[in-house]
Length: 457
Ligand code: ADP
Ligand code: ASP
Ligand code: MG
Image 1 (cartoon, rainbow, N blue to C red):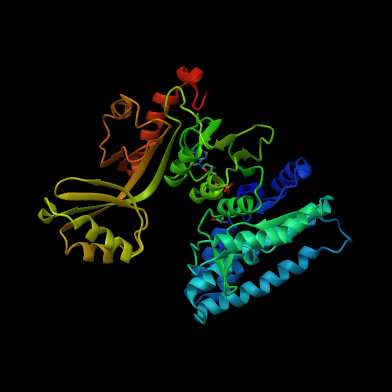
Image 2: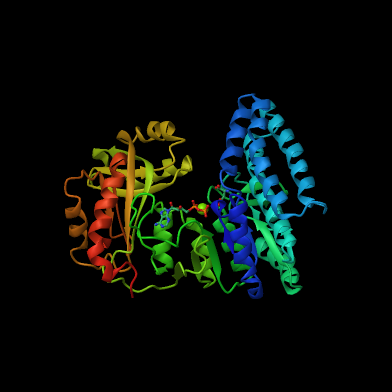
């Protein structure tokens, strides 16, 4: 059972989590928890402040967040009894002060310090949740994920080393579960072989949960969040978004990758490999089933399951007559991206040009400089990708035309269709996202189509 940040934001949220865990104790759960909401952002901001040399400001900025943890622990752990969380938070204060000081002096590699600092969100939330569960009579125990999930040395976006992780998770958690304990782990955080703290990338708690579920051959992976499952589009963009009852792994992966942050893209992989069903459910509506992600979902009557989007996209266009009838050109282009470790999302090519999209522009100047040796290069920021997902989409006649005629007044900068059987992706100017999504959502999931709601089988 994975609980996201908003599910552990305050006393009321913890209360809901307690109810949900208590109702499933018989099923022998393992709990994976994110940092309390806003804490990861606060830790990252403190790191940036310390980096500028402003140590005192960095440290004080965290105090309200320490206080939020203390408030929850005071609420659940009765006065007069020893509160083990007090010692934990004091320790965290001391260690974070030291790490922020080192950051301001740059006395250790910054990427390493950043992961060490940001890990306190999950270190604290997991300890807090374990203590709160214990106070309510659940036989819970915190386990340190940094000793269980083994990764490479890529700080900030570390890759787990599967065999070692599996072994450790089974060795440590197996006997505890057998003995009737409920293990509680922080998501997102891990450790490399040298024992240094690493993190799995933003939103990575889902990934942690999937790894643990796969390692233990769990019967189900439950992702508890603040919306009722995966919906027909981001409910923050379109108020009448609806829950999709069943999604295939492939559809969920495409959606997650193209911006539906309700599921972390990599979540899917360990679950698929081990045939573990994933359920996305809402802490605010625990009785509702939410979305089941299964190996095959079947087609939905109106063929489209959901519309995802991803902002902050830059389009790169490379034009060169050298491309005409020659081979090796694409490979030369891709080598530039490999050199700068930059991921390409969507590609479209013609006889003499390539257009592609990037969401990580950290190395864009160097990339453009290198690509300029191959042809004329244009970089155009300020775009967004919109991704329409549905099983059987490639095989459906007339669907692309229906999509584009719905938004015929919108300028489409790039289209990708056919590579995946389940998605059609196009790129538009960022400020058009709400309008485009609302129009498409209205057309495919509007009120008059209630009978054919997304995912009806
Ligand atoms: P958590 O803290 O539980 O990990 P996230 O904020 O990472 O939660 O993900 C949940 C959010 O994802 C929702 O509040 C919603 O705004 C957003 N979201 C984007 N696309 C979708 C979608 N298709 N269905 C549901 N939620 C979506
Ligand atoms: N706390 C981390 C983040 O905010 C990981 C997660 O919530 O999944 O990105
Ligand atoms: Mg998330």
